[in-house]
Amino acid sequence: MVRVQESTSTVVAVPDRSAWINGWKFDVGWLIGSAAIVPVILFFVWAGASSDAINLTVTALIGAPHVFSTFAATYLDPRFRRTHRSLLIASVIAVPTFVVYWTLNNYQVLLSFFIFAASLHVLQQNAYLTDIYRKRARTAEPAWSRLIDYGFLFLSMYPVASYKLVHSNFVLGDVPILIPNFLMSENTYGFVWIAFAFFLVAWFAKTFVEHQRGTLNYPKTVLIAVTTTIAFLIPMAASGERLELAFQAVNTWHSLQYLGIVWYIQKVRKSRGLIESPFVARMSGSGRGAISRFVAFCLGCSALLFGLMLAMWKLNPLNLGFMQYYYMVMLSCLLIHYVLDAYLFTVSNTATASVERIPFAAPAA
Image 1 (cartoon, rainbow, N blue to C red):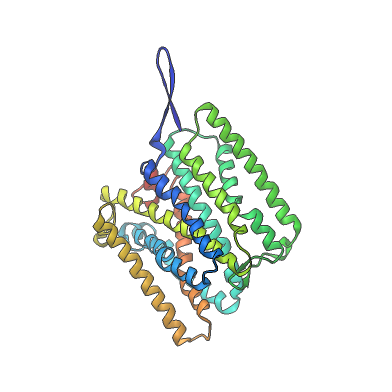
Image 2: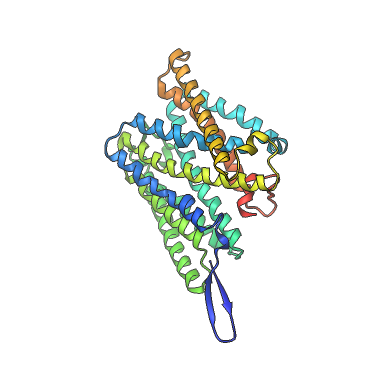
């Protein structure tokens, strides 16, 4: 945003960087600028790299670590366990049960549910960040302004995707993604396009007016612009069985962004003495040692997870293929992560959220 300084003779617009979460260099370089990884992954997709190589590399090096960073801030945190015991227990029981049931009974339904949940999760994470920037800027925005931001963000991935879904041209690997029969109509993607166009025009108009008035929240605006551009284009980046890999490019950015968020959250909580676990505290915050321990923890958990997948595949107790065991194990962890984050992203920027009870309230504190 821009702060206006007044004197007896002049009015000077001075950039106000208070909206940045950890300074503009960190935010631009990590939370926003890490989007540069998307075209890098797409290059390998377009160059014909193996699907298994891309999926397993992204999952092992970035995807799984970002999931386990959530568990470090929740399941491994005594304070969070005390205040959210029911949520943690329900998640660890209900989610794997759901995943195993649908893997065995209708694998296609499971993957269809997963891709929609994943897309919403990516967009909700960026909506959470816009709320932080909005709160840190200390500028009141009317409800309709926030509605326009949300509408533009949450619809950005679906104009092209809805067209492909209606025409049965949206697959995850070799599995076609399903939508309810009543949505298999041209009216579906027609409505999505109209709604997206409305929010697109409204957002640009709102942004122009805010710029003219000197009230533009620059971090929030840049993040929304980058997110919506990538989300809109990614369903066009590949087709058929390669479409899954295009979404891995977005997942890579999302995971890098998330790792940066959690690192900052844990840094703030450690500085305030809010991390009770000595193990978690040692791998939280700044310093090469803490970061190295955090990376080692996440990669170690990833290695254990892949070991479990391979063991299940080799023993094959359920007579399934490797990818089904892969999704059974990975989705159990991933969907628990989605459940926890859906809650944390939703409540973290409310007026009653406290850093002591809600870890993800730290960036806006």
